[in-house]
Amino acid sequence: MESSFSPREIVSELDKFIIGQNNAKRAVAVALRNRWRRKQLDENLREEIVPKNILMVGPTGCGKTEISRRLAKLANAPFIKVEATKFTEVGYVGRDVEQIIRDLVETSISKTKIEMGHEVKARAEKNAEERILDVLVSKNAGESTRESFRKKLRNGELNESEVEISIASNSNINLPTMDIPGMPGSQMGMINLGDVFGKGFGKQKKIKKMSVIESHIHLLTEETEKLLDNDKITSRALEDVEQNGIVFIDEIDKITSRREKSGADVSREGVQRDLLPLIEGTTVSTKHGVIKTDYILFIASGAFHQSKPSDMLPELQGRLPIRVELLSLSKDDFILILTQTQNSLIKQYVGLLGTEKVELVFEEGGIDKIASLATEINQNVENIGARRLHTIMEKLLEDVSFNASDIGSTTIIINEEFVENNLGELIKSQDLSKFIL
Image (cartoon, rainbow, N blue to C red):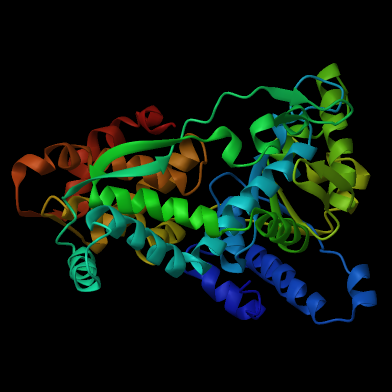
């Protein structure tokens, strides 16, 4: 886990992808660094130190989700984003909040499997190569013949040759699922008998004819699976969830209750109450094992347009002690988002249309006009933050994208005039509804 970054370095990394919002970046940077600090302590003190969970307050499209996602990527930590509105109180039909942790475990297992797959990749490559050579070269052939074919195989000379290989069938036998009584959460309570009886029970071998390059992909996957220890993957993944997991709960404001409580508000309050033990620290049963949530970092976020953080249950407020406010994006922010971020929208469109030999050149005046338009629409219609740039850019380059494959090699200058010609009528008529997502 790359968590030895200092808070300043973490903020610097986040700056490559997210413009502004320094308070939020500093808060998550300190939270991540504190994990590293905690691991340096002796065991007795380490057990007492739990993450300081974060509440982000700010309008949609200002970077709340992106900050959390980039942080998890930077830390190489198991990460899941959920919407608070998708969950129901325990006892009601729907997903209970413990499903968040079960989904996080599944994410961690997939991530760990990929990482451990890289560790055995060299051995798997060698085994796959030997299996292809066994098909290409007869058993009676000498070592020199085998080495000659090996050289051709590595040089790609045999890529299009067809071979018949025996591979595991992807279609598992349809074994029934079994409900485990007394276990909460329908998805966790259902187990597949194929999982119980092991990998081999539900798989059959079949002979298939394919090119050498295709067979290499199939055999590499098979050989990697053989070399992986599933128990070790699960054990490592569960520990990763407990020690490094990050849960981002969006739309937390949508489950807050107003002063006058209706039936729906009572149900929303029930979801808040269910979240309390999860965030404070509890144990959750999953089909892979029991997870302690004490050291998982929870980041909650919401716009809080129709409610305020103080409308949340006091106990839930107490479990989200760090509160940061994110600001609406200005015209200058939009200009920086278009030009300064690592994989900016402009770079994306230049790259996409470059594949058709259409060169896009964005001039300062054109970028300024796009940013002005995004700001204007956000102010007059609905503020959706940086997402507004996606709708404007798509509309601006609609004709170019459609005709790119026909016009051949050409250069298109995106200046103020180009923006006005393509979006001018909408600007003049103020018919801004076309940009509403």
